[in-house]
Length: 93
Image (tube, rainbow, N blue to C red; front, side, top):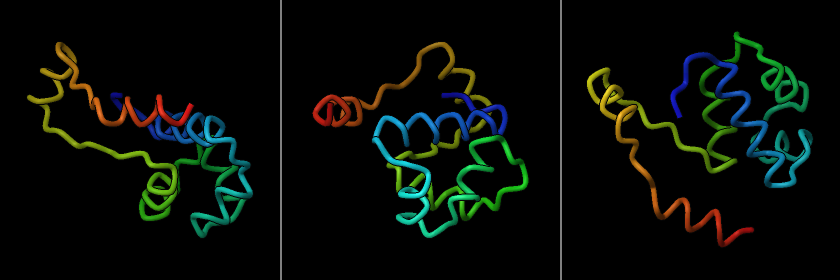
């Protein structure tokens, strides 16, 4: 997924949280942040500390893959697929 704004990360986080059946409170407890922080981030709060964002994404099993501009352009043409992640996702359903 190409991230263009913090709202893209927030939407991904919210979607994964709901897919896992976690409430904001449960995710907050597991990640060591407040439920209010989760709520504000999911609403698009752009002043979130990157360390907290990374901690929550890690708890949700979301990995951020940074690429340079040349790789990003190539990925738009032929996206890479993580077959292990797809298989894991199907096994948990």
